[in-house]
Image (cartoon, rainbow, N blue to C red; front, side, top):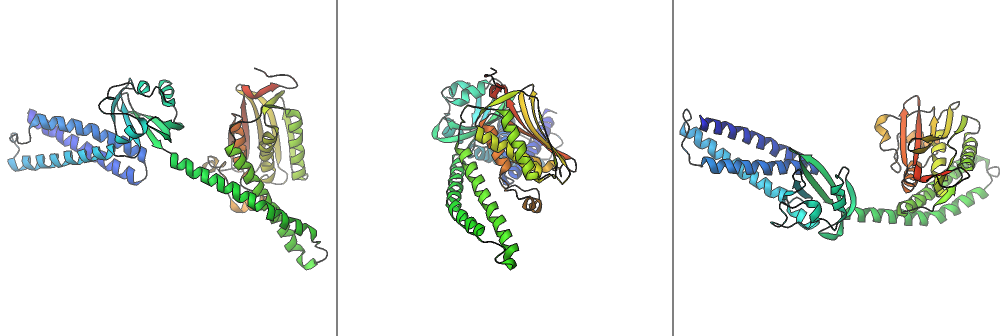
Length: 423
């Protein structure tokens, strides 16, 4: 009876192992390295279990009652083959390029792969059973672990390889266990820096010839060559648009390399009045534009950058709101601080696009963007400006009804209007 139960348990364990094997392989080939890491560590646990059972049941044990010797031999052969495959997968997990560390509920190290030795500086057998935050006491990861590791941490120096930067996350695993995953993102950071340098250099090089071209086009009077008037008008419009794209790219390049902003008082009353005048000039009477300012607060930050961000939101609203629509600019208090928002009765944006709106050159509709004259960089600039001011961009939109773009500023960035720091 006990032997039959053992064989049933073997069948269940082998089925579980096969499912985990399939999940790991499918996840790996689909690019889900995190999911594959979890599956492979789970396979590691199954390997340990099957190995213990194998030693307890003896490979050459006699067949149980009711099971022919041939069936028993086939079963044991399949079991050994599965166990061998699982050991191979355990070795594969050990050689993953990402660091994988299995922790118990006290954050003691149970198991880790070779990448964890290289990136995190862990060593066998010394670090098995130690508290990970104590082992990494000299790293930024120690405080992150002690705080609960609730959110992934980016661009942290690798404790075992100071030249590398890591992206580290913590996942729940099994019964009150956790899985720490660390990926070396140094090469991605280098590629990103190359991209930024390329964009900045190309933009600088394009600025001068575009200025010359636009200048010469302005010198040509369409009345002197009436037959070319439509062509000259289009050339002027496109050269101006290209010049604006170059200026926006240069602004983005500057913002991406900037780590802090000057702490200057930004009088919101005058800034809001300026933004409204710019909106009315762009609208040319085609929209109803309203300003509601009740916050009675100024901001601490960069006047130039904040003007660029707030103006971008209003100009987008004007461009994407049909004639006769309304646009409302608000500056109001919130429990977290204050919010600047722009609401319109425009086309609206499908939910599937909202998460990607701040990507550079992202288009919901290429034809609509081309008709509006936008550069596709405005919301990227807004996002970077807000990040530098520790603020958040919130977007709400419904197709056919309209959109609201809100910039939420914390108390630390607020100043009493005409007075001093609120804090």
